[in-house]
Image (tube, rainbow over all chains, first blue to last red):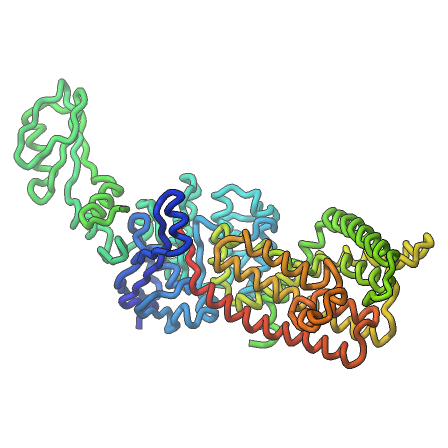
Amino acid sequence: MPQILVEELSKTYRIAERDPGALGAVKGLFRRRWRTVEALSGVSFRMDQGELVGLIGPNGAGKSTTIKILSGILEPTSGRCEVDGLTPWRQRIRHVARIGVVFGQRTQLWWDLPVIEGFDLLRDIYRVPPDRYAATRDELVALMRLEKLLNQPVRQLSLGQRMRCEIAAALLHEPQLIFLDEPTIGLDAPSKLAVREFVGRLNRERGVTVILTTHDMHDIEALAERVIVIGGGRILADGSFSDLRAGVLAERRLFVDFAEAAPSIDLPEVRVVARAGRQIELAFDPRRITAPALIARIVAAHPVDDIHVEEPLIEEVIARFYDLHGAGES
Amino acid sequence: MSLDAALRPYLSVFSGRFQLMLQYRAAAVAGFITQCWFGVIRILIFAAFYAGGAAHAPMSLANAVTYTWLGQAFLAFLPWAPDPDVADMVRSGAVAYERLRPVDTYAWWYARALGWSLARVAPRAMLMVAFTSVLLPLVGLGKWGLPPPQSLAAAGLFALSAVGMVLLSAAITLMINTVVVATMTDKGAGALAAAVVNMLSGLVLPLAFFPDWLRPWLRAQPVAGLIDIPFSIYFGGLSGWSAAGAIALQFGWVVILVLAGRAWLGRSMRRLQVQGG
């Protein structure tokens, strides 16, 4: 029995529309025109306890809708969803007592309260026994290095500090499943690394199941063994990131610095991407010609100063993938 | 789950809100001064009205003065607006987090509203009573002050009715909150509520002054329980069985509004569309 079971989940919204201008506004008074938007259509997947899954997709793809349904905030239009045997929106109170959720763009702490008082309030809300709470809190405070932040009101924290507190806040009741919706959005590099490291440890050492949505592909690369790509309300891919990369964009890049002005390269397996002074950037498909073979041929023909191979940027892979599936934001 | 654990989140949000709101001492003093000012003006108007010949007035000038001061003392109970915290949450989208709490959202917001209104009323009412029941008589203006309840029985019934007033006020605040959730904006709901509450509660004019044919209806509607019923009990305008009946009506409205409000909030929450993010 998987921990999370999602079958044929669909969600449609009705949105009121009107024609532009004053005339449209007046018309709208008498007759509302509704447009149906399909946020999710037939999403199915399963997850086991202890998995760390990245949920990615362009803006408006349905990632957040999926998370909101799984966490019990939204009710789907149709389909089935069970988390630990509970249907989130029907058994909401029991369900939410067992999960932790962080929305990177919102705050669940109280702006006016010092961090520690917000934590205490969450202890009462989640009915955590006091001794258990003290132990968990102290551990989280040490792990996330929150000692100096605890007595500051939330409004005075920087975004990075706040996000560390938010993540700790979502874990005070020791959930075995956490949803992280864009937890690194807007963070500087050290804060991102800290969040990534912590989430990874939580998953590895505690066996906490994590569902992570993000637009930062480095989060995915660093953390997720399994990636679910959503676009246009459907699942486009579900598998490991390297499989995804291989399926979409096998192409690799070779950067060559020649000793003198760059010569013209005329090989059937190779495409010249860019040329600047003595440097040339070549694209090649490793299934047609291996990197050593290509390098050998170039070095044999021309004097070369430096040479290195790169994988295409992870963002490029994803952009290409969205394009291929027509999943870019419309 | 023990009862103690079951109630913990609600008690916690109540006391947290109560303590936080008590910090706003300047607001309490400012509110007290404003309410004194309006109280004086109203009493001057009543005095002018009674001086012009009031043989048919439905209550004595002394009772009108009592009614006025009580209205000013408990003014902050009047549910004129949504709970500001809830309005903020709806505006920012943080309202989604409220659905992630393992609590009944209605009961949770109700406890929050109670903490809010009680903390705002407590200091103002104490200042007002000190001013109108102690200070005014001391300087020889006792005639214009707030006398004690008409009798011991009236005091007991008033206490009970005041509890009803507090519960009713929170139930109406929750209704306004629900309008805010359903419409996704806090504009409008408050303006409409304030107009209805001011007129129908008896704040602007005691309900006794309305025409005879209208009065039974005005006394029966829920908002009468915010001012007219408890205050009339205080000065003896309602006593005995009619007071008991009025209190029963108050609590009946509390039950109806809570049940309807809870169902409506649940419905609105399920329809809630939190955009973006």
